[in-house]
Length: 514
Image 1 (tube, helix red, strand yellow):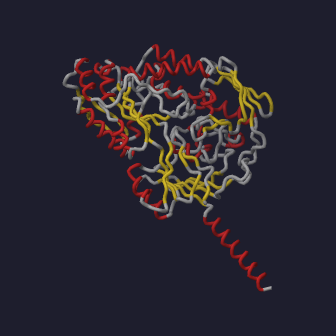
Image 2: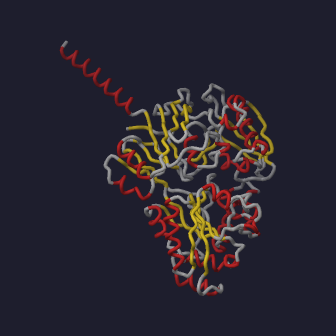
Image 3: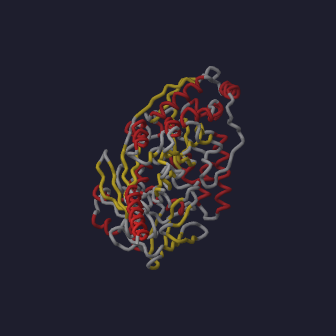
């Protein structure tokens, strides 16, 4: 009797303990550097908002940790050789969080919405090649394009290409309303957004991936001040900081309760040269600047040395990346000065460099200014807030009126494919305001390669075209290629499954506490 009682008491105690622990460990809090802009991924352009949205929504295809495309709401696909027709089979047994079934009709409604310019969605340009979507069966759609587009499946994996519940699209035809009533097929349901304060999501009980999610809720807290973010992590107020500012890496490392999740990134940091200016018309000047920058030191100054210097116009983890060796832009002041002298600038020249006013951009900008000063290129740093950059840089209707001389920025290849790394930055068709070619760079051979790679679904043909484009762009240097910092998340040691994809989005759907 005695031993029986003990066993019962012990069992009850261990159950209580077990429940107490799991109750304690089921709510996840994450600090992030800013607030979201809304909850309609079709109309979103910032990575931070996409990160929060990935808990609510899913896409037909998504990326794994090494940026390879994997089927999620799709199961597989086929395409014709000319990359103008894609047939996609869909996952069965999936419901939206409002109970609406996920099927071919839902896919058609969403892709039609994205592809229709009349909706004025910010991500329409990514999907403007969709001519129409046909429902072939309850779980099969066929996408017809108005031109060959070999990067279609990667584009469907872009964070914007989510599936909204058709019922919520109908209930909230107004963009502003839809953006605060998100309903997807993801593991977490939207509860509330208190602007500037927090975003709260809770577990969706009928989520199709059995056994997930492992946490009951996720709350995001916008915290612009870096040191406050880390103080919250150290005190246990949050269990993760996204992303971890690199100058606080040591603070986190020194705390035995904390850990750093470190993953490679595909943000290419670069300095664009306005090639319409006399100085930057000459490729020797552009090459000189590429030789004048110590990329490893740039990584140290800006990103605690965590990342990799550029070895191609494509970041390493982008599909079709090919390392470039000629020219070899390793740090070489003598070579830089010699090229400037050849180009007719033995004493250098004065130039303005625009950038965002984020702390890390100003700090690395100062370093770049100092480096270029050593070859006589006298840089005046002009940091701006996001609104000014949008207006002064990205909204100039006529290339001839562009006031930019140099621009220090970064670009994320958020489709994981070479097309989205090269076409927006270097194609003639992408001059501002249509794209992001802030260099106003135009090269017929590069345009031909970018175009050829989209004319086919054949991977070998696409690779050959991108190999050639990388070689031409590397030598012609329309920008100074700097590098790709690693993605860092600060977290508590007992938390796993929270990490950043190479494109900078945070994944937390597999979050669990040990």
